[in-house]
View 1: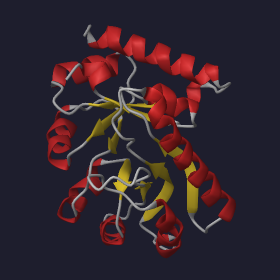
View 2: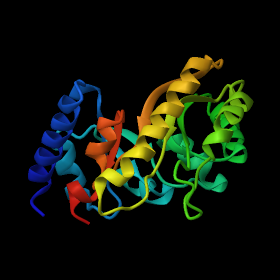
View 3: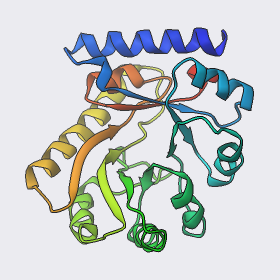
View 4: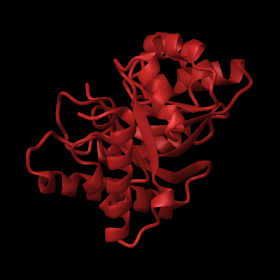
Length: 227
């Protein structure tokens, strides 16, 4: 792996190429730099090189970094969120990617109202049906959205998924396509207070395929920081 600067240049070139391949504007793709075990110096370097969104898997790790990094960046929670961590998540994050239960949605709504905030969220969808993954069954997403559409403390902005791991990138394409098609069906329903602005899908090994299939948020850690 090269430096953070070199890695970001490579990732951004690939994002542009993938977008242009399907006649999309690369500017509409948001890059979330997933920091995990990255050092503060690496994160600062990434920000200096143009990263505007920091992605964290765990609330506890984000708390420490959030206090150190005073630069104006957006914070996205991309990992599983436990209900007992919601009060901290609501303080830190601008977008929560991983809403995967009515219990969690209710807790986020409650805490957001307490903080007099409205939190943007994505609904995590288990598009592959793998038992080891979090997320809603695709067939149950619409009913869930109707149930939470009246919540005042959260605003649904789209969907998120994690594709199966595969050495052959083309094998993940159908999963990304299914999430895009689900997003389009939901958009056509015009459910009150529900937006389908974002499709968060694609990581270091498969983000180019995800972009070709409609992703406008990609979550990349190893490709930038090398862990």
